[in-house]
Length: 415
Figure 1 (cartoon, rainbow, N blue to C red):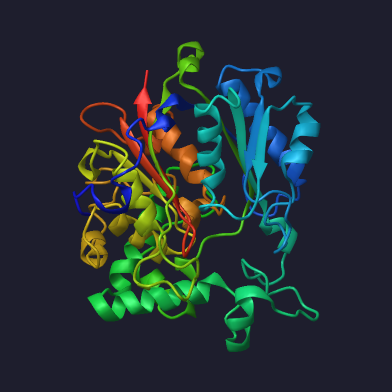
Figure 2: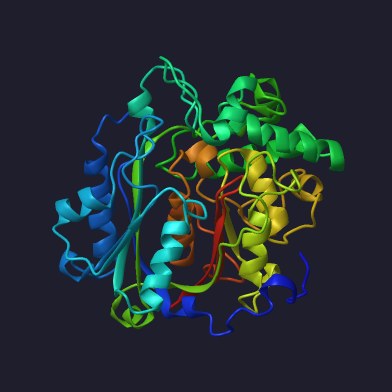
């Protein structure tokens, strides 16, 4: 990553208003495969846990943010939004937001941070709920966007009209195209990419909530069925049921919480390329290239200061791109950087996806990474707790999203 702080970010306000916000509490519902629980039930469980963790009551919550809102296409993608949660918890809101057009799943958290920092509200309940495993049952997995796995007649519109005629309804195919380009340009190999999945499985074995905890070997990875070359089954995240909630509060609230909080050091949400999966200017990168550059230009911290990285793995190649974009290695150097898996292990140079990520712990769609970052910063990760310089991690980076969607947070432990 370049150390140059000029360019498109040079004129940004140095006040860095995000530092007026903290993450004061986190909560997570029961998670698993095919729980057959209603999405609102899961959401309320996670929300109440996060509110209690933040030392608050429902009467003190005056904001809600979510992604993508009440949307159930494909089946189980959400199914619950701001309206349902406000009504269920009887909240009186000063601010709320929910919608699909956002800088990745963390866009809802980033907008909540902005709302708190500007004084629109004091405490925002941010949540993300999925129940894809139950909603899709024992049928084949649906595509993660419109266009596959639903049956019946479908007339494509928008960008899907250019991908469906070529039998490309899913992000699995689009990301595979990008991975193939990276392999071609930089010599990246499947054996190298495998380390993302193998590392996730090793970490998941220490996470009692993870869906897949059985050991995985390199031979297991190389011999499982292919999905879209060069991505195999173990490069794809695991459909799950569960809800994750976080509370974004005014920084002053830290004094009222009985555990450390996560101070928001910097955010990254920029996109300077075309908002397209297949027309991006450099298919070996994605929108995280711009989000990461923005993040580092809003802080004096550097990649070498990061103690733990929780980076989106909807597909393993996305994680490799986040590592490059955030400057843990150079562009095109991700393969050699993760080769052998030692640098990204729990005791390595940059512990990665310490809960098992979505590849093994389950697809909680971005929010699971933020939840894990807070658990690590607060010393609550149990057997998978990272120890840095003799104590709990002090700095965590969270990146979520792939393709033209990306948002990033740099968090620091505040006692």
